[in-house]
Length: 420
Ligand SMILES: [Zn+2]
Image (tube, rainbow, N blue to C red; front, side, top):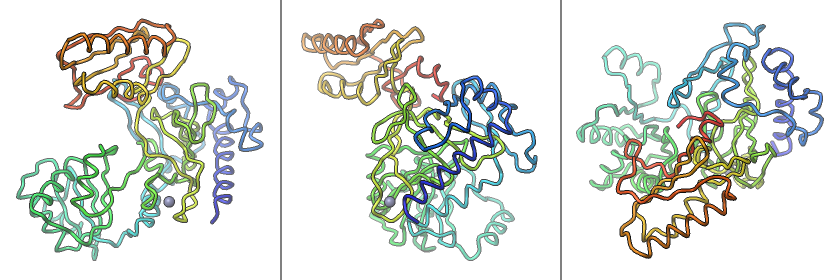
């Protein structure tokens, strides 16, 4: 399978899902008509840019019209997403899209198969005798090691590590907190599990320091993936190059700038087109994350195109009233220059576009004051004087469950209604 063939298949599937959406789904008929778009305009891959972008709020406000009324009800399921912004949202899904099949295909590139022995760190594990027996039969002869992350003692961790060794566990999936505790234990007691080939941290993204510690402890790579509740996995990390292969025959990923133009090798908003949900299509659906699609082909032999690991969310950026976007990476870079002067900072953009920068400084001296003035004039320049920029020295910056959010933009949150 070459890159050209998978590209062609992806294009046919995109055209097909747009046609199905327009012909069968009331929302899309109206949505596309109002925006002067018609599926017949999709003549070449370049014309894909003409397809209107689907915002989360459109889906939330038109839930029932998003569904194909002629679809067989037994194919329709749903998933819940959001919630942290106060408006949980339901999305209809297609039961014919088998997430497990997709996952196992991607694991194949890591040399992992369903028959391999697995370690699981979960919040719910089989505890009663009957459920344990059922699970043993279901997965026989595959061996499994379990660790319940909802209440973990060091004895539990020790037993789990012992199980990993004695059951020849090949891969582990688990929550960051649980994985980190196991890694700490293994490093402290100088323990190794030679059979491990992959560790999947299911609540990405991971901080680099945590990732490095885990890789040292487990002696294998930590698999990074990109996904969402609406679809499941979208892209899985390549064990060779570290970037993510997009599941291109199931998901199409576009990266767009603020005007909706398609970008390659440049950072922008991520749009998802679910190629396998025919009961309630999601087409150019803005997920609320920012990422980069890569034009290079991977040398590993997997023909699926690449994207970089996803870092920031859209809410990590500030916007001016005229639509100029200032990314989180850029803002972070400004403050990185003054790391010796400031211990913490937070950029907050309010509903009315104004910006307040909270800075916790080591000292309030002339140098600090001069640095604050420099930052203020830089930000005034970047935002083209379109809104007020205030800088406040403070002793306390609010954290979210112990994690400082460097950039919080109410404008971005409102614009895309993304999850906080
Ligand atoms: Zn690859």
